[in-house]
Image 1 (cartoon, rainbow over the protein chains, first blue to last red):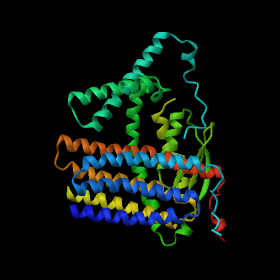
Image 2 (cartoon, each protein chain N blue to C red):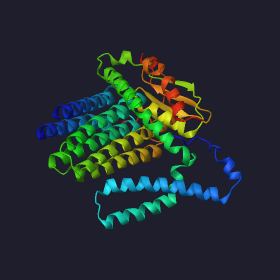
Image 3 (cartoon, rainbow over the protein chains, first blue to last red):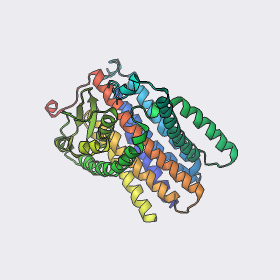
Image 4 (cartoon, rainbow over the protein chains, first blue to last red):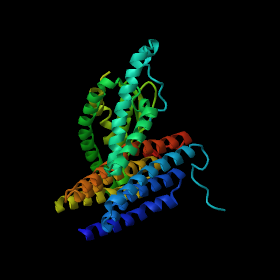
Length: 95
Length: 187
Length: 106
């Protein structure tokens, strides 16, 4: 069973790389925000999986809970901050 | 989601006739309810049952409940709230089933090779007959949780703007979900 | 019991895969929110419940508390995820981003 969890965690990190593409190359700022949100929701699961692999689920569950709350607050604060028009449209290529 | 709403006038009659005893009773009921909830959450999170931790939990949940108990249950009379929660818990399994069905539909769309021809993003608008803030918030959150539809805006008059990813997800609105929520929150 | 855990875990991972590929493939920001917000939430529900079932296999009070905490994570995610999605949509609407429609394609 441990190997299953090990490979699931590995697979989750690979999927996070896919979301990272959107977080890095997204055309607008909100696209990057979506990418960061997706990575955060996967990290919550990954933390509990890491806890299972280490045999300390009770400790890692608390960290995962705090991470879920932090992810929510980060997305909320960032989207409130970017409500102004500044920086929301297609970014200009660097000159 | 409720930031555009005007405050409802449900508490108006009790405001006009502020008898001290009813207000004290109301405060006591909300205090006890939020205290019990907070203490249960404390016990689950702490996981220790010795006297020191239990005392700490009692003190801190009492302080938090005294300060913010009236924030958690604003517009509902404390008497009907248990029945409301029971109806809400009966609604949740149906919602999860709907979420699962719609998830499979979005999965099919995403993995389809000709996805760009299948999707048809659009914003549809419809009027809802729900009146209270709680009912509208529950409805908007249910719409957002169901994949394929995202609530963009809700006006004060109850007009919903919903972003749909294709025609099939949009046709189901408001539909069953609204009638279920009307049953949960009777006016 | 092991089979239930495996089925839940792998279906959750499938939902996560769908979410990530949807974020990459869909044309604009509004439609990208559909897989990002929802498929990930469903994936979290399935994988976390798989882990909760696995933890509850040898039952004790300690394990029961851990499983309850995992259920609380799922509840918190299900309350906060629509709010976060709505915040992002609202930011986009207020900034004046136009939704992508089929007519824009040609």
